[in-house]
Image (tube, rainbow, N blue to C red):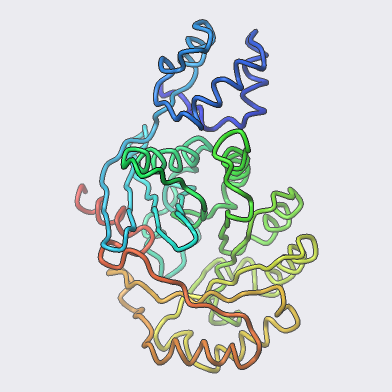
Length: 353
């Protein structure tokens, strides 16, 4: 039977677990330091930890549960990893280089049930959630890749925007965030972490109440219910009005900006009238909202959608700016490799099937 990843335990959980098995808190602190500061890949390498404690940990946990299946490196420094899990499933993780640091995009589920009609991630339905350890280990695998390069680089930012709906795997997501934020470990600041959701309103409220301090992004992609329902089936269950209520709750509790993600699809949602309607939807939330326009990466299986013309992107941007809406256009990464989220996994699945 496969052992769970030790990266799934927060420091508090590791302390409690070892104490329940007869070991001191100091053993947990030692093991934690070896895992996240020295970044060893075996329990045997924890040379100053009690042998009995190491044997116990090795009996119940694994350090490596992800194996690199494929790796694509872009000319712009983006690296897309395809990892094989212990059960044979494949997931994607992406390293991106920015002026402000190194960002990693992690996956939270094997497949996705949200069913956005333009997305490669949803081509295969969700088969299971990832454990907190499997999510955390994605960061560790990328950091070990950077360590091996010998340039002293560190993961500085994390975006939870890979395959799956993070809030559909809520408790594992929260544990993962606690692991990577811990100041005794990776110490990735809450303000450097962004979680993206397709709009699970009740989970946005629950997430807000946890007070985790991380950034929130909403995959909106349309300014009205009719259009959003057409391209995102989740809108049938959670219409825009309910979603905006949850956004208002987040803003009221956090006093910080929220990002509305908007993929531009040619002649579908990219006209000036859509931009005007979006500005009206945002309304007096303007000081607390940034719209992130995303150029579409075409997916073979979704041939009904095409990338918007540059003139349409500029027109949409200008229409929002004119109405005092904070707006940016996402800088593209990895355009010379399988850029769309889920695309590499989908191709590998088809090739092996």
